[in-house]
Length: 301
Image (cartoon, rainbow, N blue to C red; front, side):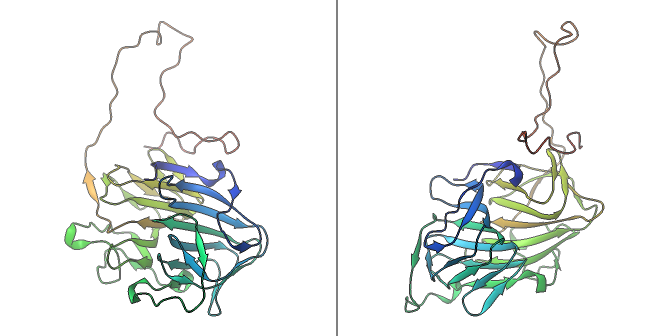
């Protein structure tokens, strides 16, 4: 399984050669999270030259989200900023052409980087597993509290919609409930209690900022939480709120915990008032790289 990444900023990560076999051109990737067992991964990919690849079939369920630039998918689709496509496992993906300077988020699920070129005569696939292509900039935002808008919140299983959040649903598997969506939190939106979920939760911040007890999440900040990891509380920025891409491997149900507290007690041995050269222990803080600097807002409550 993928390890827990409470959060990391892409500035703290290093570039690798992109895992895009059979492609012509140059690209590099930063691994936001990586499953060493089955090859599932979430990556920021930058194309440093024009790049192209023939049509074929991915070994993994594969999603592209365009942050910047242009991606041409077959003869029918031109994806600019906010463009998205999902190819479930076994689905024929059209030929791709990418302009130099394009930046994307690339997600692989249930498989590794392998890709098999294939012609158009590949066997027909079930209707439920066809290629999904959307242009999110042309989509409307819908309130999470509306159960009829395609929200993946499972109301029958205790899903708890939180007012002040809006979604654009890009993909949902009708069988497993796996979904990918954009979420926008209005300025000042806040969720107080700690929460955990029966599914993994993964997010990349696209705009604005979130604050919570480990610091601030601005553009380029990412987290991956396996199921049952408690987290929170969260507050969106007062000026612009926050917009982020969210993925879960099933219907998202919020299980809340009020009055939670983590308390560490003990008697000092060789530090404290009698040892002026000592320093008190610090609260747990995520570590940043020297190049990126310290986490913002370390004292956020």
